Length: 449
Ligand SMILES: *Cc1c(COP(=O)(O)O)cnc(C)c1O
Image (cartoon, rainbow, N blue to C red; front, side, top):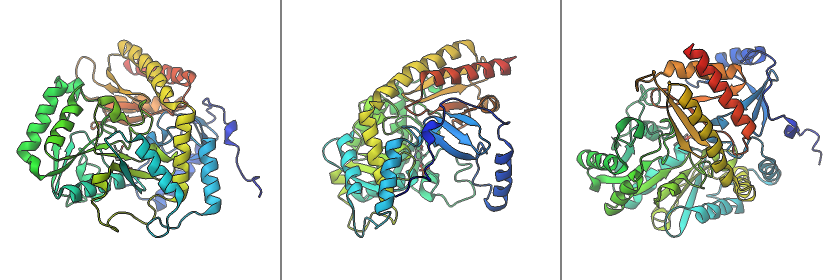
């Protein structure tokens, strides 16, 4: 078997290189072609066409090397084209690419379910349904909770993001662009106030009391099937709730027979320094949802829950043609192995120490940075108009644009475009962290001048 056609990405130097303006001529050319055949609803925030990638570096079609601090929104957690993941996917690709698990099953699906059961942050034996995307994970989590409880209501939090399907777009805090104009929106969804320490000044218990009072008044606990929460809110701007907030919500859910679902599609699987972010809050969820980072860039999503809850669905009630695809499952097993073998949980903690420390120093220098927050390699800064807590989305965008011109790819977050998020791979070096912080420092200085 010839491997001559394999591109050796391991030779991509882990540092930026700028050969053209960003985006360069070849990217612009492709972008023009795309406009004719791809609708604008599928928006690309940075129309930089990528040709190959490895570790923390993207190489675009003009040969520019870009430092990737987004990871396709937290997908390439263990780095782009990780050798073990690529090898596992290639090997599986050459044997069998599809059978349909709900028809004739295969081992790797079972292996992924075993790994998720091993790391399940809840109580007792866990079982897993595999799907393809984060939104499907949320859809199925809700579906399973409704079946188990026999109740309709779905509680979510302000600033939440859960996807772009018909159900999940109705669960998001932001109506536009996700749900606006696509109605009718799904019913029986209750959006309660969250905990937002920078802005609400509440303790975790006070914020939880407010959330619970809202849900009891609007939905009624006895009508709620589940509460879906992101332990660290992703699109919402990496908001970390105040201490005690999530345990109080979990306790209320338990007392009222409401399924507590931890949406770890963005925070999950090693990124925050624990396998699941919820572990750091002392909460045992009933169901945990994974997607983005679980299979090193291959589409895969997991709905993992207490056996009693997962077993309540009738045969045939759960699944989908591509759910738990063999190639994606092989990649996911390799991701779990890499996390274990390379001590990536410790790497996430190291990145938190170094990166958050440097961002905190930066915040002391630049008045526009009102907050530095997050866990592990899921960090953000919130940007305001100096001396106020007013959002400054325009400044966020200008800083991101300046960084792009220096070969550093950053992404905004927050319901008001008011934060810059950092989702480096767990292979991100201290040198790259220093480079990103220097680029930010220069950008904020130039904007303040
Ligand atoms: C991205 C995301 C989703 C949706 O995942 P898709 O794979 O884009 O469907 C759901 N929940 C959270 C917390 C996310 O960050």
